[in-house]
Image 1 (cartoon, rainbow, N blue to C red):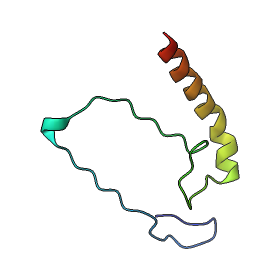
Image 2: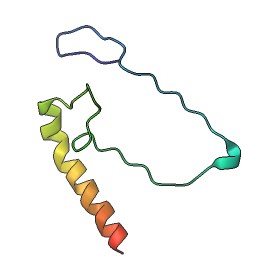
Image 3: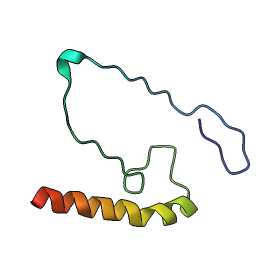
Image 4: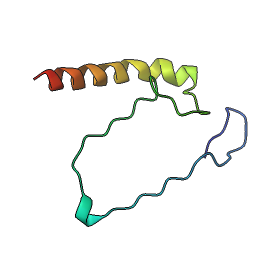
Length: 68
């Protein structure tokens, strides 16, 4: 569901999760709506301003961890 500041809630997407026990992979997953916003659902500027430092720090930490 998604809504504008003064608008009504409306369906935006549906997520279905399934698990195949024979094909379980332990891979890291990360989401960064600052650099990769969902098409049609941009991160509102006030939230972007608040969250951007945390996402930047998380990207830096992942880079540092990958570098060893």
